[in-house]
Length: 254
Image 1 (tube, helix red, strand yellow):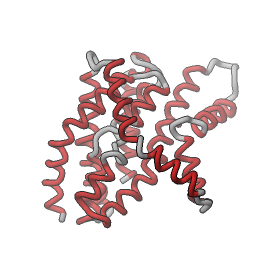
Image 2 (cartoon, rainbow, N blue to C red):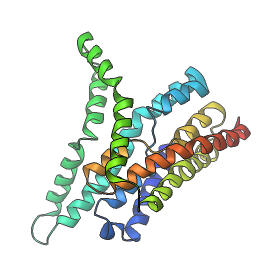
Image 3 (cartoon, rainbow, N blue to C red):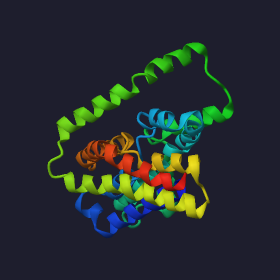
């Protein structure tokens, strides 16, 4: 899954740089568009969908993908944008290459979107567990994730609007709903020999609409917030049709 996902992320990033998006829209624009075209709504929409379509066996594969989804994609996008920001702020003689790299790594690891993912991974690997009181508190907070995300997207639509950003949002939506699942299908089936349930879970995961994290990412760098919001809206609406199309395609690989 992550071979084509990372390949698409880097391809979008490189294409945006080649088109001069960093000069026209902002230094962070290539990375924002790259993460928007590859990061799906794998939790709020993906988990119930995987459970409904594939049962416990498919859900287990989906959850395994989720465990690496944010870590791999957000880490890569954060590293790219921090490198771009470091290069744009660099003046000859002001700092050494080592200092620039160190600052980039620091900003990447302490990123407010990525840091919770890394902290959760370290905690899990340590096998420390949670006190029942803490566990219950986190469960209550977790139950608010979906409505809070919906409010966030709604407020962003009201505040930023979508006028003037539909073209970019359509491109992102096509990348997420069409290009990524197609790439995953090709690589997973013909590259790694997957078929049946594992292949179906991977392709459906790839076909999910743009998630809320790209919007948080865009807000973090104050770049393309309107476009990210519009991409979430358009891809979520179009997902009804594209999911049916991908499920039809997957019948041939059952």
